[in-house]
Image 1 (cartoon, rainbow, N blue to C red):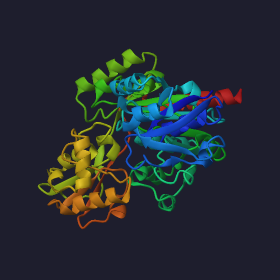
Image 2 (tube, helix red, strand yellow; image 1 turned 90 degrees about the vertical axis):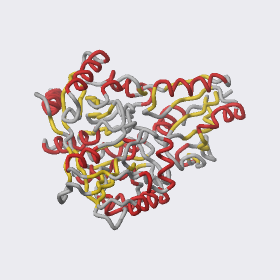
Image 3 (cartoon, rainbow, N blue to C red; image 1 turned 120 degrees about the vertical axis):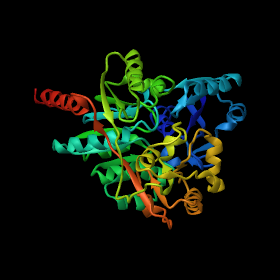
Image 4 (spheres, rainbow, N blue to C red; image 1 turned 180 degrees about the vertical axis):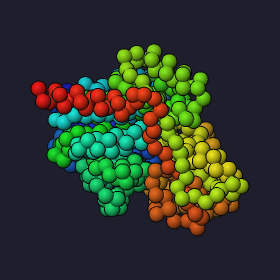
Length: 444
């Protein structure tokens, strides 16, 4: 008798957990995945080429809303939760739904799901989406290359296209993103790394991805997605905390997990937060993980090649995940607009219907548009919304070159933000100390 399992996911952690724990387990039958957060995932299949010989027809991906029906119709005995950046209450509501139809409920942990690398690994994670971890991962890649270390960035999965083709993805130059037909969401993560000179690996099968990265690198940086814990066991674990959201260190899953696991906490955006919030973040993290080191960081925002915007009308496009499921009302774009003295035009009265759906789903969003672009329809909706606005300029705080991918008649100004130290010895000092210690261990 095989235990029948349903995996709740969002096209990322769910596939990895299956590959690590269930693909070759003859005592388990995964009857389906479900999809949440990411549009267009439900209705597809996890292909047989990735699912293995035990699943010649692949595995269906269904809608999470049908959890109870799937459990009843397919005799599910265990429901496995496998996605991130949701409240603890959200996880337990799903657990209650599973228990109510007679199934068990399970979270797979790091011991079962982390791969072991043959080279050192530094992981960068965060307690919430939008804390600024990717800027720190980019900075870290540059620091390691300065020391003469061949470095590979492993990015948390974003397999929104053909899963067969996305089994192992390697990005070295921007043209690689065009060849892979990356979505705006994928480009937001990959494009800045490539601009910084980082070699990026991602995809679906992280055992194969890790092997490919190890063949080219002396050290690996794990750039986490959302607030998930790493897929590869880190030798140094850095967690990023948003000083603007000090009370969310232990409120979301698995953000609290990474806060408790980390060796170093970076309290970021201290240049934007009031001192009381910074101190609250320090105290909250210290209570959760008293053994970790704490450093402070700034995330200064600058407008690139911008004319004077005093009194000019602007429409703002922010990083999508940060202001959707990340829970922020706005981001760096609004900060830049206010600093420039611009008049911010409310984008929602002229937003295309497809984008207004995002506002209905995430009513906390302020006077900004999320850079949604999981498919061509969403990209067309974003383009139409920008054209319909009475604004004179577009301020884009998404990490991608929006002007190249989404041509509109209005000038698009990029709001850039990078990591900057705000304490001593700072993150550089702690990373250098780690690297020196590793070098001494290797020499002995």
